[in-house]
Length: 538
Ligand SMILES: Cc1cc2nc3c(=O)[nH]c(=O)nc-3n(C[C@H](O)[C@H](O)[C@H](O)COP(=O)(O)OP(=O)(O)OC[C@H]3O[C@@H](n4cnc5c(N)ncnc54)[C@H](O)[C@@H]3O)c2cc1C
Image (cartoon, rainbow, N blue to C red; front, side, top):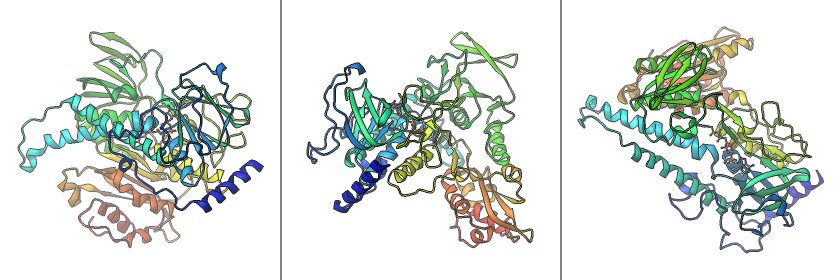
């Protein structure tokens, strides 16, 4: 604790001498695609503008990877050492550096982790490819005649790769600009907040730190009997680079990622069957939101089979035959989308108080502190919602806690969730079922997009906004408990709902706000004003 106090005092002193705090920049704006400023997965070269002897710089004592037993360096000391360069790790590094901390971040793969390389960004990019294909298919309805669209999948993949590379490169530049020391290799934590780095191009190093943040992320889960070959059996990692769009596919798992892949492939012409063990797809979403997605999927020919047991598969021809609840389903590819597991198997941790649960998650308290003093854990390696924006905020929380700023912690029941299927889904706060289970009396309102001018204009009138509000003393709608949306661009519309739930706004507060016309957010406004008992349009 004494060390932590001296760290805070040092940061305060350093801040006092800093002329400016580095300017906040967006990732995409930070560097143009292909910017040579940062090589993917490699340490950022020293900034020519900073003195070589700058405190915290790690000497490359051994540029060739060498076994850990050959580590001979003296520990280099940092304010914070971060293990993992995904959203959790890089948010910690960027935010900590903005606050004046001297930070080293260790990444064994590519900067940006799952999110930038094999998660959020490439998945949404391919969904946009599918949306573009669909727009062109429907262009004749607008009187725009372009003929039948055809897909050049290699160009689609190249565009996706270019966006990923641009963001990864931009991240490298941002880290470099904030003077974060990025090390390429496998990081492990040892007793006394010592961290070793090995097996990468930074060579074998030993670091010490006042604070360590663990952010090793997660890996796709697989199923017994479904060996991933990247051709017939794929996880999300492989789907995002699949060499061609299959004619038929089985998606095992109807969660968010599985449904996003189902939606994308179906819009590109694949006959998709979703196989889900639970009674409904998209568990966790309000039932009315799920219903909108299900109805749309079924209308488009996506087969949804719930309550089924996947028993294995038998390769046949160029595809395979999946055994499902005693029946066979012949498909070209199988996408195994059964969740992710924390990547905590090889983090060292011997002799530390860091506790890993039976399920592999690192145990933390409300501000992401582990059982070891001065060690935090953030992102997918802890049992909180596995979302990039949650990892970002956990990184921010950890840094604030390192600095003794007494962060409030994250209210995980009120975070924003987005599903990028067609139609999209988005929600925050309690579903109707959850509110009732919590013993609350609720009032609900559903307002639909099918009479909304903008939704009709863009030809996407499916869906609705559902508000869950607490019943107040006179039986009317009071505090807003949850906002649930399914429909066009709702991932971009959730913001108002997020603020309403988190600022504990009432229906009256929200109903008095003006929604611009014509926009899709008018549906949210309509739902709020309807809850006051005086609907305007519907
Ligand atoms: C297909 C798909 C789509 C997704 N879409 C979304 C979405 O739309 N929105 C959203 O919010 N989330 C989405 N997610 C989830 C999101 O990607 C994760 O929640 C997020 O990446 C977690 O960040 P993280 O930093 O905890 O872990 P990761 O992103 O997994 O990063 C961890 C990093 O640590 C590195 N590492 C691990 N161990 C070590 C070690 N010992 N030494 C050095 N480096 C190490 C890894 O190489 C990796 O780069 C999606 C995920 C998938 C798979």
